Length: 510
Image 1 (cartoon, helix red, strand yellow):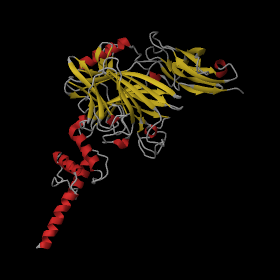
Image 2 (spheres, helix red, strand yellow):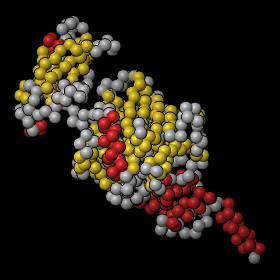
Image 3 (spheres, helix red, strand yellow):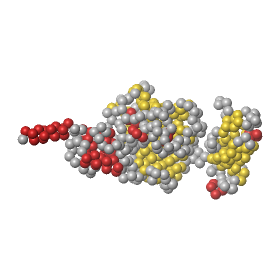
Image 4 (tube, helix red, strand yellow):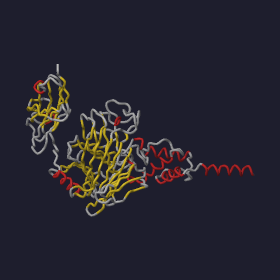
């Protein structure tokens, strides 16, 4: 009997000794979602581990099989799923309001640190939050009790990311952090400081993480099989100021961002920024702020994992079906396109609607790249009204001229250019010399009026938009040339458009 008693005591002691609070957290959340882990005892038995594995598959939780060592990560991941886009509470939220014009900074904030800024929209407070958890990216916009943003992982939020040299995710500094950060309460991105000079603004300074770590694989371009970066954190730096309210428009949030490239790159492809909304914002529209015309766009060919993709030069508005809550995006920068995307999965917290503002820089020499964009929130009607008002302040050509340089060598420069606002009308071509890097000199101009038989089926007009110039007519001196070629705009209120590629280098000295 004493022997039996000792055995019982031994096993009782073993259960207590190996109980783990994080495992208990996992068990509680599994049970809450209908996955039976067995006894809620903090012990990682076979039943708990199997239910966690099943849950991970169903809800796309990218963690190794549950163990005592990684149970904390599992606990946090399940909390995110349980609490939706709001996520776990931050440990330190800074609500202090600095005096107007007085700069208040927190240097190297802890992982639990966040800062709220506030404004008033239609008589109700709007709160916006940035935090160290997501590298200073905007993780929450809340108005009238509605959370607008999805923060399921570290690639979402309202955030900036850029591809370099055309490698896609294989060379991809990302403001919120790395793919491996996933559900963590911290970010690989280095947040150097968070500052505010008023209750309605916040500035963040970061060194962004690469989305992929060295040798990791992802959605890479140019045939790359693994990341091109050799470090976890980029040498690029990023500064962003977010301000609620803009020139009397209380529901407009201004984003002023500066990317600093530490060296020359072939190209910069930037989301300036992108916004991930919750699964509720399923009403998607293109809005022409110049005319007030609103349209519901059809999806275009999709690439997994997206189930809906639409691109346009008209700014997007995404709303709840009842129109009570909406968000729009606008910029007066010359951009590549706006995008709207939808990711449809069973897990409502993972399901997301996204807008993008996409811009290309080719080439991308070292230095500062500054971008201003706007996020508009409120009811569907309020977002339309404020976007139209923004357009009146910062008019942009929604249908700019475009074209392509097909050939640029020491014999000829040839391509095509047109303005969709003026079909069947030849446009003027202007060639500028920017060789010395300080002065931009117009050295040649002519019409793009040659017939291009390949253009009518594409453009829907007479196709007289081709050009061909002898290089010796353009580059008249025996030296290297750095050229920019533009097509004129049919509307004198708007600027010319640069043809693609945006820069041409010629060296024809012999």
